[in-house]
Amino acid sequence: MSDIENAYETLSARIGTSGTPSEWFEITQDRVNDFADVTMDHQWIHVDPERAKAGPFGAPIAHGQLTLSIMSFLPKPDDAESLPQLPGQKLTINYGFDKIRFPSPVPVGAKIRTTSTLKRVEIKGSMIETMNEVVVEVQGSEKPCVVAESLARLVF
Image 1 (cartoon, rainbow, N blue to C red):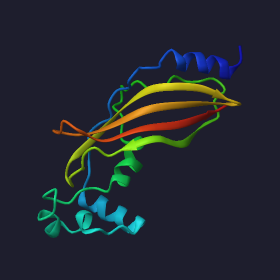
Image 2 (image 1 turned 120 degrees about the vertical axis):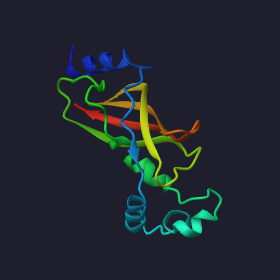
Image 3 (image 1 turned 90 degrees about the vertical axis):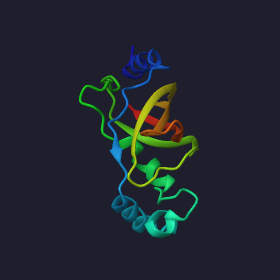
């Protein structure tokens, strides 16, 4: 059996499995301001704390795109289960998203973390495409702030 076929079987056996949640990560005003500078999105709801106090959320909030951008890189605990080593895999490519929703805001100063669940695995030529549902939660909130179907391509 080839490396890609072995990897496909290994990953397929994990469909429906959720990884260990990432560690909590604080969204600071400095990080929001830096993101605003990079994206040129200086809307007051994000970068003007005084004005945002009188806004719909009572405080400044992070850009949804900021949360989406960092969700894959949030730190995992040292003992977190990760994808198994896949013999023959050369690299992983971010292939995009099937669906993204922002059900609730992330107030500046809040802490977020992610949990990822493998939902789909398909062989695509010399690659394996995976789809993970990634849920980003805000500490102390019942609603997640992001739910995304994230696609990756594993190159063999």
